[in-house]
Length: 447
Image (cartoon, rainbow, N blue to C red):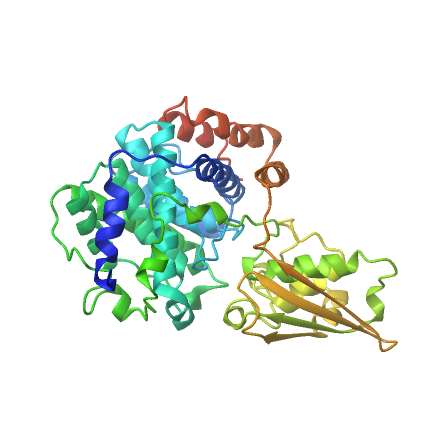
């Protein structure tokens, strides 16, 4: 089947009325919901979250959906914008390496806003979000590394398509309407990697969520767009450096196998591209006899695509530090807890002991290393060396993942808020989305 059919095939996947969901995919979606809710509540005090909340509050409008941190409801599109930005403000949310994007922060805010607007059940909300996140993974994979390497932020671009699918599902769009919705968002999707390290990066996630809601609402009214807007001549893929890899490979098993189940949750509070390096360095630091002062040189090898994302050589702010191989490596070797939000600060960037190690770190790209892996080598003063490898794609059991997410939620939030987030797992099948949103809103404390 040719590349001209991606919009139609995704629309069929999204609009099919009767669909079964693999148990594992639903379990992972609920884990990601808890993860998303925790990083959202923990990020409420971030300046970018406050600025977008202020914008939304000033504009006001129909009371349709909850924007965390605001006392009254706002239009669904506005809630998606605010919650999407908020949830990516800490850059501590999940990542999928089939397309190197953050699915939850683009799709959950759109799905939550639309589900609340429509009075949908919690189960319908999670199922719609799962469909949207799966669509983002598949479209992102098809757009390929060329799209990402050109400078487009897949969280925002592919994420907008996923947000549209989720919102459209909750609006019960038919196949034709879903195609038009995807065509509408094809002309709205945007987001640049040049914004990394600034407030623009989390705003990209908010834009994706809001654009998805907007596109679905317009399509529901009969708005006509290019029904092949992703793949047509001068369409999204052609104008945004889409690699357009084999479509059958990108959509293999669509509707039966859910790629989203392989999503990676973050357990370090920095860019996911640094995590394999950090895990490998922590392994080396834990070896008997390790003494940091004996380390003369730190050599890192990573996939070349990460050099344009995570290689800030001399970060001056906590936000820049999250994208710095050299500083995060120094932190890991010095025993700094990179799972803690507080350590990513200007003070950490200026610590003399960390700067000394930072300047001994060398990073090189190696195309033979996958997106999820890293190789590290420590060279010592006595002429010896030691090395380690790590790959985030190695299997982790659902039980182990669940335990790590519970620990993360409790580390991020006060006990009552953590309890509310962890209760989402059991409440999805029994509560409405309005009840779920209200439960989160009660713990949305802005300092």
